[in-house]
Image (cartoon, rainbow over all chains, first blue to last red; front, side):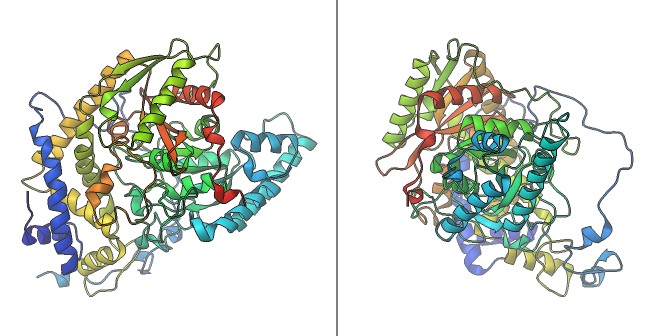
Length: 100
Length: 496
């Protein structure tokens, strides 16, 4: 299992990560090594085995709650951590104009 | 009283209850100790001494008022107890970095349920502890704020990712601290630092306000000096929370630490061969075997038990946890909170902020998880991992038909040197080989010290139990600690 540089760049694109050339090269090697190790799972026969659901099976119940309005965070508290905000909204550079 | 920092949780609460000391005196003693050791140990990212003293004074006033007039209502169970919180849990108004530069200036607008339960019980928060960035790591070297050092040997790591909490407890900077455990992050640092740590059943403690890493694996746990102390905190921490859809609505038992006759008669302890593999440090194996003999001497029946898919746990974990992490960490986009690298487009903001804000291990795992979930590879990697995970869970279900608890090493070796694994991620992942299975199966685990190696470094054993059987783990740990003294040993750093 050996990743190519273009595969690494594709994954970084999907993950929205800007990587340096040095990082790309290092991750290519390290991820190849880790995936090689993980490949041992292919040897396990799971043809009759269902995938694990997230919860332990001991208690099964509906996690849906009644759709009732409850108090929520104050707008000013939510915006307090925003890198940029304006008029009670998060501010970002134009989105649509930048698309090709 | 001479040295208040020598007190554990129960002893602190008793001293406060008798009026031997005030919460302010107790808190000051721990703060002074922290101040003295911090230049060497660096257990905290954000110490909160002023907040702690305010909380301590409030606790003292409350106790005074209660003594004076209103004794009808019982006082909160942990009133005035100093405690540190891993920087992965939100406390309103105190910055929460999760060990990452991407959250360097993030001040949460709300408090996590786990922390709120402890605030309601009256604890005094002395600070937010250091950790591997986003809890990804086994040494605390991946922190964006510099590594924590092990109080037993400052050239060695405290384990991770709750390394700051473990070091703070071992250095007696606090009597107890909160941690989180996604793949061993409470138990492994507890083992490396010679303290006791509980990883509860998945769903037992609310994850609301816990910075998400691997959502099907994340648990909130406690590090303290003894099983009894950890249990005292755990009973306040646990409970159903409608704000966490994976929180489970089962009653939290009153923890009776002593089994009926004080012995372990009738208890079946399973010992899995799969956890005594070649490559385990001989002194670790010897200490674990000896500890199992102690349990036998207390009346427990020791039985071999099989967990045949143990060897697959590591590759399963290192596909599932990164896959979940890659989805969870998509939220750090530089738009609503966290680091923003200025750019001309939103797309560039995403790429540049994440490229700059995340450290190497976090990027590595996001890449790995993104790959495992990507088109064409999903079934071969993530799908297969989820199916093998079922086999690992079934192993535990089968084993708990035959035994009540499983005893095993926490880690293959004692604390390693800083920098020892820093260029080899796979070698670092192998440190987690014995702790990952409990997370994959969702079962609880209790780690506690059972000896030392030739370098004077603590060795930890873990007991794993069936879902929701934390009480049994505490009882067995307590019975062991009643007849042994490992948990009372302190690092030479504290003797001066």
